[in-house]
Length: 207
Image (tube, rainbow, N blue to C red; front, side):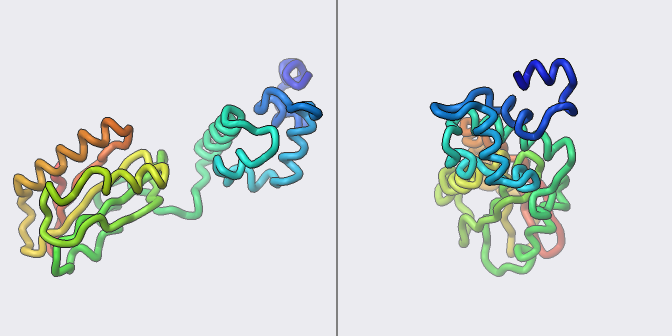
């Protein structure tokens, strides 16, 4: 009925529960879809719907994986249309934005290999130091770089390390490691957006 009403009167003519019912598609044993929709809206005020994650939605009785994914997709699209920011997370739109999150590397006495993990809106959702010491391609395994990406549901990553010597010249190790991680990222569906070298005098992109 909600779909027919939407077609006849347009989306603005539907109650909140009717709109939610259309997203859900069907109810559960003992409850029709409108009742399930009302339960969700009673439990989660409209302003909190956009902040729900998969785990919270999947805990609602009658919401299986398919319905949970449909709701999450609808909420995320809404946030993108409205340009809603998640908890004021910093946005990384340029190399300079990334470097601003890596200032500690400028003065570090040892080499640090750090990864910045981004969501689909290029917001920084996690930062992790992967390795401290002399950078060697054999010592930095792709799983150490991409496990946090998977755990944090990141869609892309920026890798960076410092050269305490002050040299901005990428070594062959830097080039090989970047290529290796880029290839691993392609297999996992996590893009390596950039690979940076940072010193006390500046920065350069290996990629």
